[in-house]
Length: 341
Image (cartoon, rainbow, N blue to C red; front, side, top):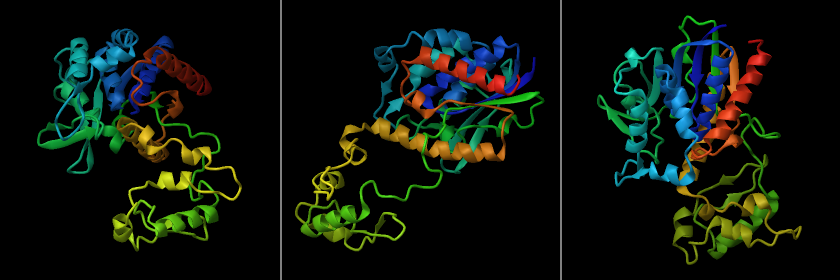
């Protein structure tokens, strides 16, 4: 048996995997002596610190798509599309009106202070507001205002908060990341290649922008190393020309490529109009957090790292608790076995 400092990362619905990780640790007899969490990791971390994560797991398994939608409370606030009062109400029923310092297990909830541009650690004070601040995905959930600070999702700056547990007297630090691994074949360096043949792409777009079919993004230029470069020299003029409302995707789709195959799948789909705003926000967040998490792990590696792949679920798949809990448990068992724990 080991004394474990537990670190739970951000990643929306994939955070249900944290529940499986905790179940596996407890099954093996390990004692959790401290928890830190960001976003969904803060939600599960608070429940673990309060000792009610199993009750939450039972409730989460009952959620269907329609039930999840009933928990959503749309708002007219300009700060976000959705409030979180209903969800926070459900959590408060489980943990009660309690302060963080009164939890049986020390707990840290991480949020982001937008105005100060720094992360904020909640280690004292009311628990529910600390969780609410940590889960406020910018653009989706309205931000929290606490002590004059404008607070949003902690994953914006720290998707895997290892630092709050660094000084904990534990035998083992176990971190559960919801941000990887990269897909096979994905390059480590930023992509620099065109999606279609560079010369054909650039030639067709030049022709359409000159004709007035562009979207005002500037004239794409060939670049020796294959990067997309726009000179931006005629942005105003292009936008003002007749037909300038046509999208870049439309221009590409209509292109008569030399190989006669038409537009490759990676260019033609998905189109911007097929992707919902919530998906754009969540996918953008995933991309950003994946990169930040890699840097955080390099600076302060845990003893055991459990990595839940992005492909396990979308950020808003909150109706899939059962399978994600199972995934988290299986991945944690594998990581602990590999570490001899």
